[in-house]
Length: 182
Image (cartoon, rainbow, N blue to C red; front, side, top):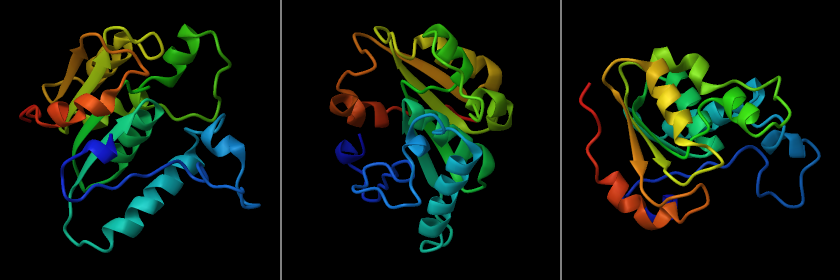
């Protein structure tokens, strides 16, 4: 999706140590698997953003996250003062709920965006979800919107899209949509 974004300034952040081969000794596969939503990962992602933002005083961020990246983007938006909007695509915004739906092991160290949702009440946000998504169902976005409350969070259900659909192909059209007025 970042590659199909037409804006001039786009930054893609992977989870710590993800896509790095060979893995340095300080990296563990757990950073992007079992512990992918742990406080250490969220802090590392926030630190990476701080390093970038330092180079551009006064910049405001438009956070975007796909799947688990939606959870991370929302958690970062909640803790930062320089975020002006949030968009998620098939965002896992309620980690425990999604894990329960799939009958998979809980992630005890995970921080879940739904637990911080009310702090995002005044942030413009759109949560895109596919009507064919069986991985992160539309119910997850609706639960998050309900937890946020207010009028700043909107859920858009995109017809025909599943979790693994080509979201990048429609990303420019989704980006062109106006954010809620807060």
